[in-house]
Each structure stands twice: as C-alpha cells, then as structure tokens.
Image (cartoon, rainbow, N blue to C red; front, side, top):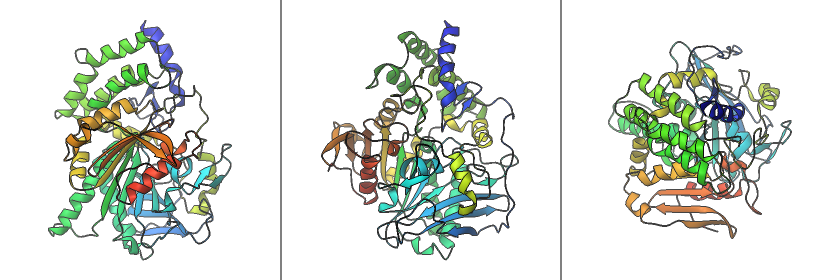
Length: 483
C-alpha cells in the first residue's frame, strides 16, 4: 500500500512552482548542500545604503507618461536587493505605495509582476509581454522586490551569514525601505500610505514584515532608533501559509471536498489523516514546534508533514490549479524572457525563478512550521487594514485551511467576523466569490482562481479583474463590497 501511495504521489511532484520539490517531496527539507545554484553575480560598484537604478527602460509599462525604475538597493557590501518600481497610472505623487513579495521561500517577486498583477503580463509563448489592463499600478505606486538576497535578480551572501527566518528577512526589507525613501527620486513617497501585499510563503513574510515595521516606528517615536517612519496602513495576503497547525487539516478536507473533483482515492486521504493524528504525527510535531521547538524540531515537522500530507494528497492534479492535470503550462514561464532583457533593466544576476540556497536556509532554521498568526493578529489590532484572499482552485494553500486559520484568529474584530455568514462578492454584477468583512479585516474566496489569484479569470470577467477590485477597495481603506 505504501509503495502504491508513493508512486501516485511522485507523479505529481515534478511540476511545483513557487514551493520547490526537494528529494521528491513538495516543500521537503534538503538533507545536504547539493544542488545549490552557483553564484552568477556580475560585479558592480556597490555603495551600502544607496540605490543604483535605470529609469524608463521601456520594458513592461508602456502607458504614456507613467515612469518606471529598476535596479538595486545595496543593503550591505555583500547584499543587494533588486527592485522594479512602477508609478501609478492615476496620481503617482499622492497615490499609495504598495510593496509586492512572492513566497517560496526563495521565489522571485517577478512572478507576481509578469504572471499576476504588474503593468504587463507575460505572453503564452513566454517570448514577450502585453499591457495588463488590470495591473495594480492603476491606482497605486508598485514596487516588486526580490528578497532575500540570492532570490531572482538579487544577490548576496547565502552561505556565510544568510537570512533564514521571516524575522531576519523583515530587517532587510526595513533597511530597503529606509534606503529607498532616502533617495531623492523617491523621498516624496515617505508620507504616502504604505501597503504590503504578498502570497504563498508571504503568509509568513507579510505578518513578520508588517509587525517589524510597526515596532520600528514605535522605536523611532521613543528615540531608540533613527530612521524614516513607514506609514503602513494595509496588509494583503493571498493563499498564504500562516498558521500550519490550523491549516494542515485542510489538505485532507480539500482533497475530498473541493468544489471541483476529488484529488486522490479515499484510502490515500485516510492514510494522511492517520499521519496527522498518530502518535508523534504531524499535529504533534507542529505543536512541539509551536511550544518553543528548536530549529531541528520545526524542521522535522516540515519534513514529516509535507511528505505524508502535502505531497500525498495532490494526486496528478496541478498543485496550484486543480482544474488541470500535470504538467500545466499556465502561467507561462518567465525566466528566459527576464534574462533576455536583464541588461536593459539594470539586473546584475542571472535570473532563476527560485533559489535553492535561500530555500535551504529557511528549511534549516525550521521557519516553515513557525506560527505567524500572532504577528498577524497584532497587526490587525494595530489598525492596519488587512485582507486575506484565496483562490478556490488552489490546493497547495487551499481555502479550507485558510478559512480555518481566519476563524481561529483572536482579534478585536474576530467575534463579529465569526458571527457572519458569507456574502457574494460580485464584480460588475457577476458573482466572483464569497467574502466577509469585520472592522478593518476582510476575507474573500475567489471562484475559479488558482494559487496566483490575479492570473485567473472567471465567467465573463477579464483576467485579474476580480482581484483588481479587491485591491482597489482595500487600498482606498474600504471594506470589500460588491459592484
């Protein structure tokens, strides 16, 4: 039986995207330092604390009069983060500033830019880009940031003293923002509303980054640190890994009861359900991680749970969009295109979609199974407008788990949230999902969307149109509403 289960599972493993496959396990833990990509950094004159960039490369944003900037923030002499900034198509001087981060850990934020919500969208043959009518810079200034160092076009130390936790990553992003807003080109945005938007492992990144920003602001107020206060007002998390203890049972439920079709036979679901509840099983190991577990304990929980639950239940359906079987060519690949235009946008690193070195650093520290819900709750209670969203065709961070996490939150608005039923989220009169809002907190589940929600379309709506409505309303400090 175990051999049969393994064969069924391994079929599905070769096609994962943001979350890597390690030794045949989706989100597995590397056992050694093999298969770490070599350093491909092209030397440059680095000045720590400064930006280096090119303006208006003519790539991606083609709207007349809308500026773009791409390049590097030199965090340290051995650490440079790549960014691609796009002005708002509306009123750039006064519109909000939004940061976008993809997950992994170790995946490039160029995924979001070219496949999801940037001003341009990669073509189906991956050879070029086209104008994105529903790019999120319609009404916000957008920055897509490759982080930590070593991800995408970013470069830096991934072996000596690398970033290995979401909290360490938050420190670098705070430093990035201090450098960015100190530059004469961007200092005018210092007082604009600031937002963090992220997905997937961004369920760890988003709460950690937002909590760090708020704590640093307080430290500035108390004279403990110097710097530019960040006017953080919005946090958005799509299909995010936030609280594994509440989310992992969702894999069994989704595999059996998603809106489309079962993913695997019932015997496999029973097998994974036993792995969840058994003595020293997945639930027990995550609990031990939460209760002061060492890196080794948390790393072991990741390896066990992702082997016996996450990978076993995927079947031969695409992990990120279960309406297609493996291999799914959508969203189209972006690496070759980005390498073909890298010199025009000031890139100094050969682009790779995901960094095995960065992923390994996080896995070694057990960050995957740490609980980011306390940070998320603190950020919501601090008054930051927060939206959690998910596509109902996404398995890898599915809505059963995400909704269990949201229901389990303890915030100033949680009782009001739990007392509600779902409303229909309509876009131009068409049902596009279901949602709830309470206070400054909202949740929305999009119909027909996979892991990268803005990459998909539903009914007669355009690709990304429903997600753009959510983004625009949230950025205007509004609770979600139908149109």
